[in-house]
Length: 187
View 1: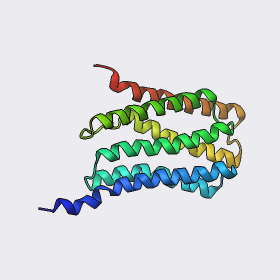
View 2: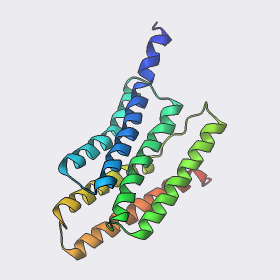
View 3: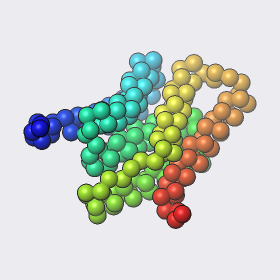
């Protein structure tokens, strides 16, 4: 039988990756907001930050290190990174106002709900719905597209680009609110 105290540091490994995602996202967007430059290196950094969302979940499952702190920190890390990204792209007129407002409202409401639930019941875990994971993945992909468009200019015609942006924004918002509302709907 293994000594539980030997597992304790391993329990925090996924959470450490999550905390590094938060710090990396804040640092990356602080620099981007400061000098308003998007480079391939910064896109690569963003992609590494996004990849840590998968890594911390994989580690938690692999070493059986799922914690309630991890279930609070992981979505919070995604919110910090994606809100910073969408904030930057909104202020530089790359995404629509309606999308930005709805996205921010949903993320702030969801964060409030998670924090209240966590404060009231520190022993229970709040599972993340698949629909929310899909929304997060699509949001990260949309940010990568926005980054690439910033460097290369429009990848398609203006009409097709608008259609892609509108579709991506609409799908992300529908998934966002579906994932938020679903737990409150009684079956």
